[in-house]
Image (cartoon, rainbow, N blue to C red; front, side, top):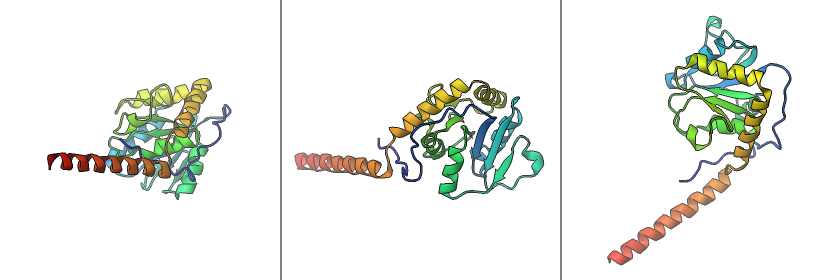
Length: 202
């Protein structure tokens, strides 16, 4: 198993996650428009929160304002350096995907001091640990996810704990170059094993 690397020049990691205890919880939704990205689910979650959060949506979706209740800022897809700045300005990334490959956005957010509230989508288990560096909730549990956002807003010690551990996770994650080096070692090992097997069979 070789982990996907992260562009450390673009996505930190930052030196430390500041406590940042003042003001409303800053929530970022970054998602595509395909059904399996869960945009409607994410909008339903922020619409069901009881406490005041500042919500930024980054998506190519064209949405009627009536469908973005609870969203303070709607942005089109951003260049990677601008997206990195949005991660750094957020407390938590909200992801409600149903299918993913390499689950990159939460890991990128970890590098810039944010935690994640996510569904148990494919790929999340590579680095998200519920209650340690992020929070995981079931699909279709709109009220449950909304309550978790309210909890993070109310309990800033928990928020800081998750963000600090998310950043620690990011520090231990390989860069592109490190992941490439490991991949080269693995491929060389497999080639050597194949050669040895072929020789013994001959």
